[in-house]
Amino acid sequence: MKKDIHPQLHLVTAVCACGNTFETYSTKEDLRLEICNACHPFFTGKQKFVDTAGRVERFKQRYGER
Image (cartoon, rainbow, N blue to C red; front, top):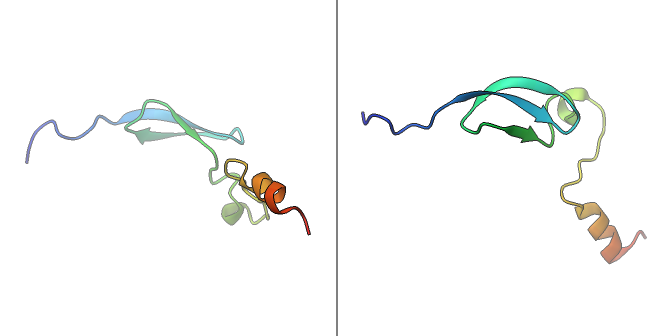
């Protein structure tokens, strides 16, 4: 096997948009998440609509609520 071809792994603290933090390994030095297991509807069992980049507002603006 070739030496020194793999990226370095760093122990990082991942920060979610909901405020949840946890430690994991990553090739990046900073890890920010939009959604994690503490706020994802599949894991929480609560219905929550996740909007990505304002697509819902754009859809409502374009077609209106009927």
